[in-house]
Image 1 (spheres, rainbow, N blue to C red):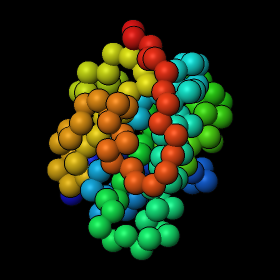
Image 2 (image 1 turned 90 degrees about the horizontal axis):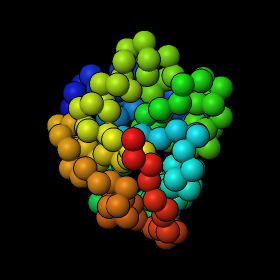
Image 3 (image 1 turned 135 degrees about the horizontal axis):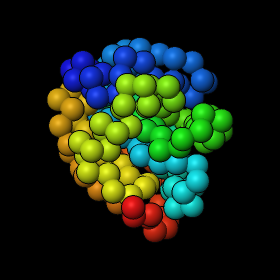
Length: 163
């Protein structure tokens, strides 16, 4: 259920229009939820984000154009490692998916909790969760995202930063 995911990401998320939405509503009915750990200052992240966005948008278009009710409902949630809100806002604006609100990343310690829970040691990192149980489906989502998104899109990717 979305409630397990809501416990992970907090009660609200920010949509691609900058509006806060209830996590439980935004994640309802999703087969997969992908946690995207990234930051504006990370060059590999800035290379991977457009690739992931292209795949995300292609998947949505594929579903709409093909009326494919069997295509999995997928949502991506940006977990920012930025420390300055203006940098978070600027980077978030380049993403078509949901984001944990900047204040919640720090005030509710969501960034630290999720990074520790999923062993995030470098970025970009993409963790694929089951949308119902919240259990990990793929730890290397960055290398496997093409197995989830349908449609046509570019898949070239660069290296990652290891901390």
